[in-house]
Every structure is written in structure tokens, then in C-alpha cells.
Length: 319
Image 1 (cartoon, rainbow, N blue to C red):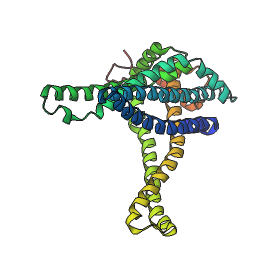
Image 2 (image 1 turned 135 degrees about the vertical axis):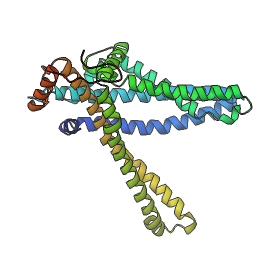
Image 3 (image 1 turned 180 degrees about the horizontal axis):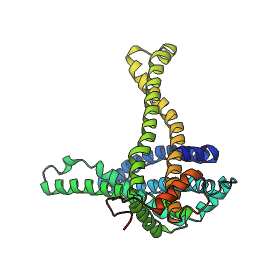
Image 4 (image 1 turned 120 degrees about the vertical axis):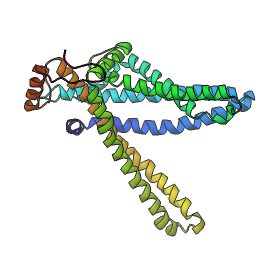
């Protein structure tokens, strides 16, 4: 975590990339939600069919999700490239925004494909969660089918997120294509399963806890400001005090969450990138130039020379 924080602090362009995407994602969310609702009601009325309206709304939502996922992977890819250039140039800073962007542009095709796959699985899983079971209450077979569909779609999306854990760094750092990046990601997951578990359960949890605290802080602050400051100043009636507090809290949450997300997101991407770099270092016997402190590198080299017997859910790390 310390090394990822140093990477972000040394390369301020990373924060800029995260901020641009955060603003884009916020605007896109408004357009996406409003567009989905509008298309559903207009098409349902025009074709006199809620089924057609639902299908068209789903297709619109899928395209919207595809754009957002592709943009997210593109911006994350820039961060990956900058962190990689920073990490592999310990004596002289070789990382900058333009260079990172050029590297990502070379991997646009696999990024778009990855974005589509994740958007499709995400959209299907979201629609599956929103299916109301009351619609099939008189048909036990349909109820079982819907339950299976909800579980299967959620598992498929979660499994895809897990399998593609290292896919983006593989595309940017090693220039892998779509299929090869997923294969490379899975190979690294098997070899570094414990590191990923630590990331998911520990590091990612810390980042999410930080965001939760920020949301709680802004939400409570906004509610109190609305209730005890804006209400008296604006002369709002007592009947609307709670409503004013809630609206102010929502405003504080929106404008408070964005900076929190802008700060946390690049740290997560940088940490995942450094996990990938660590995997490469182990494969090359720590011979590649890096920013790992010399004493830590010597410890790793000693472990590699005589690795302990460690069992994982996949295989032992030595014969």
C-alpha cells in the first residue's frame, strides 16, 4: 500500500486521469438512468408492449454500460502504464501522461472487447436482480428457473471479475491480446492466489471502509446543515425540515463522494499494477529494474532460492 501511495503521489497525472473519469461516470450515470427510463416508457407506449419496451431498454442499458466499462478500462490502463513506467525507472522518472496514453491506445481493441464482456455480464446480472418473483408465483417451474437465473448471472459476473483480475495489466504492460490477457491473468491468479485474497479481503476492504466513512461524514454533515442552517436561513416550514435535510445530505454525498472516489480509485489500480509487477519480478528473478528497496529484493531472492513448502487451493509452490 505504501508503494502504491508513493506512485500516486509522485505522478499527479494519475489523480487527473481519475478525476476526468469520475466526472464522466457521474454524468454518464445520469444520462444512462434517464435514457433507460425514457426509452422504456416511450417504446412501451409506441409499440403497446412492455416486452418490447423492456428489450429496447435493456439494449440501451447494455450500450451505455459498454461505453462506461470501456472508458473505465481505458482510464485505468493509463494509470497502469504510468505506474509501470514509474516502477521500472528507479533512477530517472520516465512516466508521463502522454506516454501512458500512447501505450493504452495500442491496446484499444482488447480493452473494448473486455469492456463489452463485462458490460454484458453486469447488465444481465442487474436485470436478473430486478426481476420480480411475483410474476411467476403461480408457476413453480418458472420460479425455480428465475432463482437459478439470478444466481447464475451473479456468479458469472463475479467469476469474470475474478478471472480478469490481471487482464488489464497484461494488455498494457505485456501487450497481450484479449484472450491471451485472460489466460495470463488466470495463470498469475493460480500462482499468486494468496496475494489476491489479501488484496480483496484486506486492501480493498480498507479502501471501501475509507469511502464508507467519507460518505457517512458527508451525509450526516449535509443533513445537519440542511436542518439547522438552511431551514432557518431560507425560512422553510417545519413540515419540510426533514425533506430539506435529506436533500442537503444527498447534495453533500454527491459532491463528497466524487473526491473520495477520485483519491481511492487510483490507489486501487496502482496496487493491482504493483502486484502484477511483483509477479513479473518473481518470474525474472528480480533482475528487472524496479523501485523495490534493495534489502527487500535480497529477501525475495533468498526465498526464491529456497522456497518454503506452501500449499494453496491450486497446487504447491514447489515440487
